[in-house]
Length: 329
Image (cartoon, rainbow, N blue to C red; front, side, top):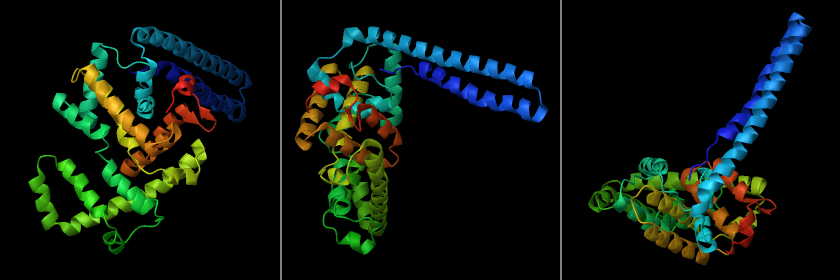
């Protein structure tokens, strides 16, 4: 469910108005010498700024109460809440509630259909199931990302690779080609022709992907250490980046249900599969969330918004969400 940002925006307007108004008042004092005018401006600016800030807080509280009332009939059991929590970062990133699965209204249905079409190319049942089966079983980005993670990044490569070094890494090209075959889907003949005729281009594309992944990991590593309190040794103990696939399963399953593409029972079966696979792959929520962020960084780069969401869930001093203390990994 999408939460309104009206309260937050109004709250932010208060300090903004004050920040703009005070320099104007100073201008009247120092450049024009109109102390009386300056005092009037300052009084007006501070009053409006404080009023906006307080109004924003009130609106935010009202929205929270309205949201709680709307969610109440659809609240989840602890078991389902745990399964859904594997998608927590993406839910927080998209301002989605994690207390309910979905609320059946036309507004949310339209939003879900638009988001799925724009971001995933999902416009119906077949596309939804295709994506969910891949993600729940870590068969989207994971196979190639895991090979790169273990053979390149965890192996200690911190500088760009040469094409010769790349050719000597057993399994890396095969994993990359397999990932590209999945992207081509049923059009496998076209891809096999590409591999035969454009092997050099494929190698250079792979080289760029790997070297880009090295740089992206260096960036996200520093952010995870500095902003969330991980250690480098803790990060290097991660064996798989499949969390990036598992975490997206829950969000797509819920949105596909909200969009009317799949039934809720089928959606939960995908979510449970992803949750069960994640539980086997990771020893704790902390390890899982770090793997999710690294997987996202290696695949697409900037994760600053994800780190903000991660800090909402798990800061330097432990979980910030009350019920997570009761959600056992």
